[in-house]
Image (cartoon, rainbow, N blue to C red):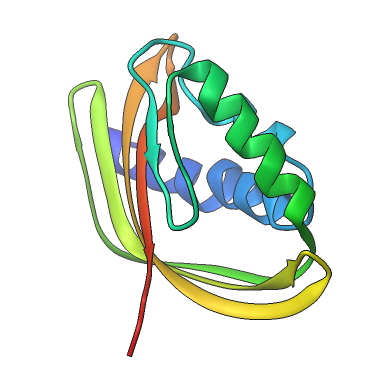
Length: 132
């Protein structure tokens, strides 16, 4: 397989599972997929973070507010791999509990990835809520 196919397989397995786990209250799989190399950043729908320390605090906070994810679908709209960098752009459709309350929402999400030690790691995320 080529770089694009390998990257897409990683998105559909490891990254998908990490996002589903986060929305069920477990931040560790997401944390494991993020780059250990600065810079790393999130421009999030609820909160921003810059640097590993802020990312760790953000992921912990998000996991504490999410539970019982019943659906997570990543609608991939565009992606590419260029050397050791890649990106995705798509819509994340999620049904979960936020602070104990059932909630369904869609986020527009763009992420930037870099290859580190032979595997893909997330370096940046931008997400915002889709409004009518």
